[in-house]
Length: 511
Ligand SMILES: CC(=O)SCCNC(=O)CCNC(=O)[C@H](O)C(C)(C)COP(=O)(O)OP(=O)(O)OC[C@H]1O[C@@H](n2cnc3c(N)ncnc32)[C@H](O)[C@@H]1OP(=O)(O)O
Ligand SMILES: CC(C)C(=O)C(=O)O
Image (cartoon, rainbow, N blue to C red; front, side, top):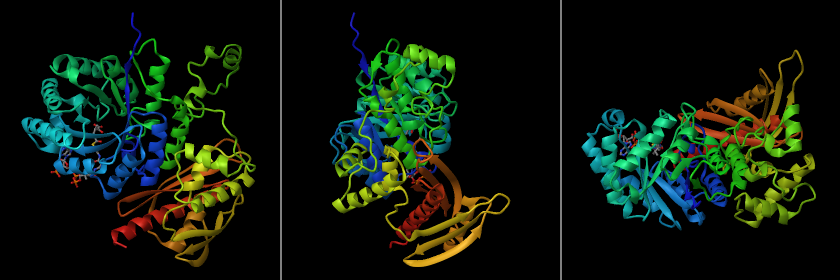
């Protein structure tokens, strides 16, 4: 009996659907960094963005396409010529490219959103696939809101777009409404009822509104699906997408059950998860499967006793298989440039010049003087924290006083456009006082939408990584700051966000 398994294509959409999480927008450099890590993990397809969405997203897709060589790079496009042409243009230098075009097929989306008749939707879908085929030999078509579409209509569209050249057919559970048995059966029937279904790979794309995204994706796999669309940490629109790490490890751990295997190197999962969390400012909850800090921790005596006697009593996976506690060079104050440069390389960070590396290395040494061991997240913070390309606002000094029974007071000194300014303010807490003092000097008019602080690594000498999300005139930005002193990290994150707003304002004014 043959034990050969089918390949399960892993299509990562962290950089596209993941980025659709409010506040998770990423710069081009951040997308490149994450794309490199996904490539190292051997993700098959990286959806790098939606090229028509903005000039910035176009540049990001283009940059990822020009950087990544081992994974296929994809851009999303509506069933609209201009979108498809823009995607084709962004991807033209890719080693392997895919255009992912889509249109909604459910009665509610066709009637109210598209305001189109089903027959027109069908024609538009076919035309979109034909147009996309002019730019690449790999075209994916998605039936948006597929899980709420009429089966017979879906079969007709699928047959027609396969005939037009689509090699992958994705039936998303766009609104997270599906239930595992029902969603799996939908694929089984589609594959049985579409006459040319053997000419395409069927794909899932599940949202987590009811917490069923991973279960729905795996049920689809049991019913013939051979591509899963997913994101690191389950990032994504609303409640998120199916999480890559959970799907990959379910398939790997239950090889007895699933008829498929991925080509992933799962040992890159945890480092990638941490970088995505640090770039987006979305912390990973400690009890999150696979990548949460407690995912492999045993607290209770009976469990500890069992694990010590025989690990498999309480562990179904090995922590090192997903990248926890890998044996690698320990970086600290005695490390030199070679080790630091090599580790940055593994993290997908490229320095544009020797001087840029030298600056990062100097920051590394400063940090190493303050703390014992430097971890990947520390390295990442050193090249991102508080470093906006325009630095209109820069922290010169911070003195915060906090005493039981007294309102905390912050004394802040800033350089604003090269000029020194200082002030003091009281606040409800030391962070509040710091932000109020900054606002007294800056008067940005921005609204604080999120403040999150995380220990970058373990221990009291860990760097605090702070994310500050500000909104002004409908524009959301995430500022980040990292320091062993969380008040300094908070001030840096606030100023980083203000600098990002300043960049977008100067772009708007064409400066
Ligand atoms: C389920 C998903 O995740 S789909 C991806 C969602 N992601 C995004 O929307 C992020 C990027 N989007 C954007 O930047 C913008 O929405 C753009 C550039 C795509 C379009 O911007 P605008 O031209 O201003 O249109 P707007 O966003 O207001 O409305 C969308 C239009 O596209 C139409 N549309 C929506 N989906 C599709 C589709 N798949 N194919 C063709 N037309 C579509 C809508 O009916 C609407 O048309 P209308 O303006 O004639 O009513
Ligand atoms: C464009 C499609 C694949 C999508 O993101 C969805 O339906 O959720």
